[in-house]
Length: 205
Image (cartoon, rainbow, N blue to C red):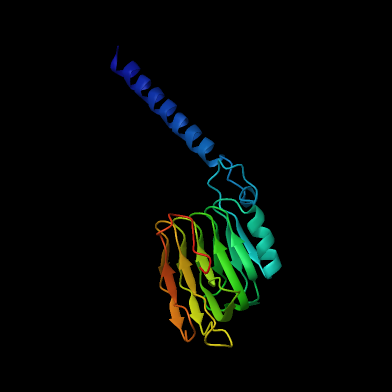
C-alpha cells in the first residue's frame, strides 16, 4: 500500500470511530428517565421504590398501616394526635415526624408493634396514659427501632396505677436517642421480657 492510500485509510477509520462514539453518546442521552410517578404507594414487591406518604390524622394513620408495603414512609404532619390503640403488623414501615418534636401523641395510648424492621422516629409522647395494664409501647416483633422520640410525663391520675412505658420482646429491637422524663407511678419505664420466647409478652406488657 502506498503512503497516500495508507493515509486515506487511516482518515476513514478515524472518521468511522468518531461516528460510532457520537451515535453511542446520542443513544445514551435519549435513554428515558424514570418518572416520579413510578414511585407510587402500590408496588409488586420487586421494585426498590420507596413510597413517602403524608398523614394528618390518627384515623388516616391507621388506614395507611393496613395496606402499607415494605419500604413505605409515613410522614406525620406537625400537630397533636390521639391514637389510642394502634397496631403495626407490617414489615419495614417507617413512621416519621414531619419535624422532630412537633408531632405530639397524647391521651390514652397503646402502640403495639407486631411486625419486623419497623421504625418510629421523632415523635413526642406527651402526657400519654396507658390503657389498662398494657404498656404505652409494646414491641413483639424483631429488629424494630424507636429513635429520637420523647416520652414526657406519661402518668395516670393515680400513682398506684400499674403499667410500663415500654414492654419489649423479640430479638434485636432497638430504642435509642430517646428522652424519658417524669415517670412517677407504679410500674417501670422499660421492661425487656424474653423468658417466654420471642413474640410473647406478659399480659401487663
